[in-house]
Length: 423
Image 1: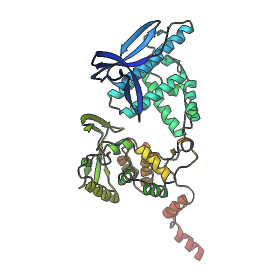
Image 2: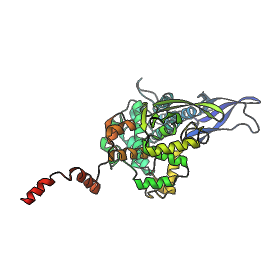
Image 3: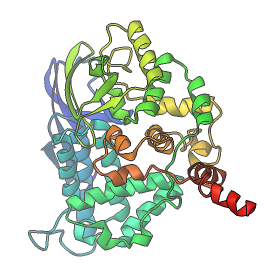
Image 4: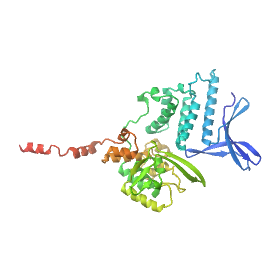
């Protein structure tokens, strides 16, 4: 089969005409940037489509893969997987062909899955995370067709995540992403992996911060914006993307409430050019959240300091800020709140106990524990089912449980006991 290496190229126009040049894809956060290997001293006048190049024997084969860098990278990875599968099949003395029209080639299924996520408006951060995980899973399994996937492939994938030091919560989330991909291939992970073998948390209680941790954390924030953002998460139960995309126009000052829109199509300026952003909530349903009085006062003061801003917690360029997770980790470390036991603390000084969704869980847990009825919390959280909200209600234990029982039943039967003693 010859050299199976696949090069990513791009057509570019220079003074001498159109040329193919190599592309180096460089990670930028969770996205990609391109570096073009243009001829020295030559200015690139125009950019054309991306192409893939590989060899069959001594013959070079070229394939156009569009104008989007992310899609070109996906196409390159799929082509590498296809060529490696073909080479392995030939080495085994068999042809890599489908046994029937219903058989699913995993490399192609991955490309369709990623394209579908992009078409339905998922953000690039989520798409990139899916792509990396699926690539890792397929590389580890070494399988070509979907019907070859077996329980051991999923178990080995989870075991590899644990060996990297990831928490069981993260393993569960990654396993769920792979299960979603397999479902798109017509495979139900439940039919492959027994329930007792799937990743699960040993402690069913919800994760929530205590008040001392929150006060120390907020005091360690470097800026008013950061402190207000985390307080907003805590006191509204908003998800990260919901909070980063809220605009001042979403606040109803007369009703002391903020609207989390189920879907937004935004036009913003990036580098002087107009760019469209599409945002959707998890359920795609809008909801109104009542603002706690102290938070409302702080938001009004923040508005006075930023009278011309569009986004409440935007960047200096007034764009949605996608770096609050890093800020959360840095703040927890600065505050001395790292657990110093998890793999994140050991490897990166980024404690796994501190993450943005835990502020949402804390909102629900505190509200339920302090008497806010579960239906109200359900509405504020935007849950479609009551059972989803009930998961956040941690049972009281020990002294706390006794105090609650004393408060409810303390005076029941006291008169009867007094009369019996007097008799």
